[in-house]
Length: 292
Ligand code: PAF
Image (cartoon, rainbow, N blue to C red; front, side, top):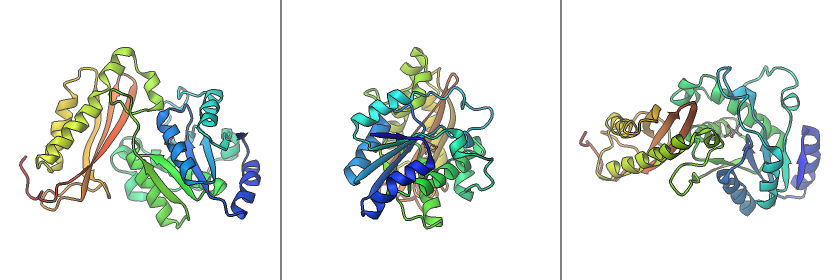
């Protein structure tokens, strides 16, 4: 496995692969890898001839008040995990390599980026779309792999690729969980022991929502109220975002015309740590006007 830190070197490494007709699977990450990332690499490995993982903590997607400085970093450990997973190339550029001068060009997926998580973190998805577009321009992959845990991010990237006609297949990979249901996340290391013990409330609330939908409840705001109340039974959990939306568009759910599937999006604070989770729930075909 090679570790490359410059754009020129990465291009020199990948150009011959593309010319030889080999497919390149790309896994963009911010490092401090966990099993969720390794599952993305496994999937890229199964689908492609060459696997490239990027490790870059992207300042553009953090607000000045956010945790850019305390975001966990450990490149040697990440490289050991990637080597064991069969990754071929790690691209780990410095900030000065990615942004030698302030970016004048930004990618803004206008409506999708500004609602829900985007409303709470202004500029976040613009920073994500911009760095991913730049990484795509550098690596020119055949396919790129993203976790479904960051569901809105996945939709933003899919829309960017469609709108800009980028010839890259975007693959969403299901969330990987610890045995107690907590979604793998680099930020889990920040949880105190009691917060970590409280964190399964997210996946439990998603299971509860799934049962409610199976029982015929597809009224978005009623479901949101029920999920929020369930999460609030855990004293250490402070729900920041609880949203039930159309899984394809993130539009509000019209219970008279229920969508194919709902997505429940959660962002919940445990002390200083904000955890995300989500679940896509197919809507039973018979659902129409539903009980509240
Ligand atoms: O999901 C992440 O880790 C980041 O948002 C990404 C896609 C690597 C862009 O910095």
